[in-house]
Amino acid sequence: MEPEFESRWCFGENNVEAISSCRNLRVLSVRVGYSGLPKPKESYPFSHVFAGSSDEAANPVHLLLQTVSSKLPDLHTLYIDSARDPSYAHDHSDFIIQGAQRCRAVRGCIEASIKDPLVENGPKLEPREDPYDLEVLKWVRIFVGQEKVELDAELGTGY
Image 1 (cartoon, helix red, strand yellow):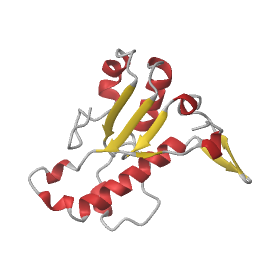
Image 2: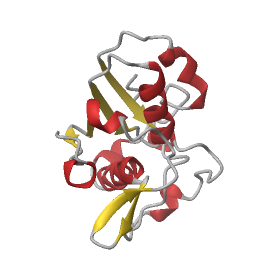
Image 3: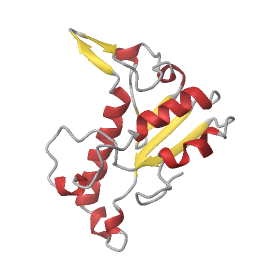
Image 4: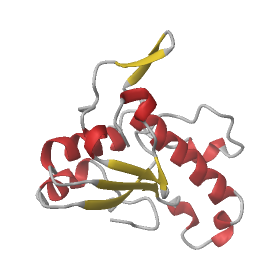
């Protein structure tokens, strides 16, 4: 599911059941909307783009990883990326600067969501109350925007 713009076609609560029924998936590629992701920690020059996102929405990355760990036992590769802001549907200017910066910021939020269940404890990262089963990180290779998320130092995943 790779819609160009943020919409109900992005992975979220509305399509968990449909994805869950595809139990034999081995590779899954989805896009997520910004709503529910943690806010960017870095200064973002176009912060108004994120102003309308709901803090009450479920984190789509945690929901996706919960779905993978509980419903998709054969999955071995997961691609997650951001969808474009729908307010630019008829304006290609977001491809040039604003869209690229927003995309990088959202990808950073996606990666932060994957690493979110880890909390610093001295020099080590340890699991906090699990928003998803951390074991999924040991058997699924995860890519954000075509870049592999490396977690072996934090979790000993071996990938």
